Image 1: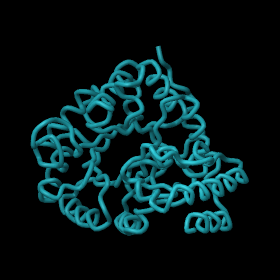
Image 2: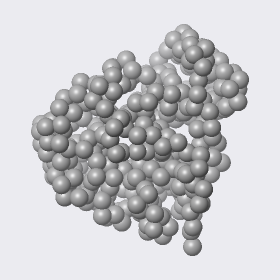
Image 3: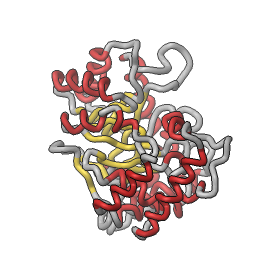
Length: 329
């Protein structure tokens, strides 16, 4: 029988969203496409439990994660039922709905029917009575913000979500929906968006400022840009490298230029006693508005290597200036 490591909270920093009661570990675990139906269950279980043993008490999911829709939630649900259920009060379990989930017009976006059905499916798959955060996975241009806000507010009132969030919303979209959530007194706490050293759209868009002004947090997904911000591509980036849509613009300047930046960043990371991946995670966390970074891992060694980022989250002014100089070339 699984027994969690008694020292699990010894090293992982916990970060709070402004003055709310919502807290996350600096590093969260995302299931996305790493632990769905194409991975051996025993391996998935090992990685998830090792994450919890190292202070990662936040597990991030979505209705369309898998690869097959729902299979990542099913994997989580199996591990939860078998091992993590005794620790439910410690866990922050999140899920999302909005990208394509099932056939027909109600299988995507954010109508009341779509969101409510998606949440019920997610709760069933994960063997839960409630989730800690339910996110709208993307902006819905077809459905009024009022309907979307009222639906998420209802989830909270029903006790099926403790907090709500949005994902992939721009600064303007976040500002607009924040106003409505405030009017409904809905516990809206975070925007989960793509953010990493080479994809800084949330800065250019002004999203970080909107979040700070409204005492909201950013949960950064894709913090390593699908592996670009590791030592894997220091010798070159293959033309057929699969990359998430949110990071494709980062390669438009040409792969040779990106590789040059990666090598200089890697040299700086080495000077800090870190790998490039560890420094990339730490760099995101130097801004207090970033509540957590979501990492995925299909192997324990990758997980443990990335977690070491929290051992050095401090940057000197010179280091930050050198990073800016490299990234802005």
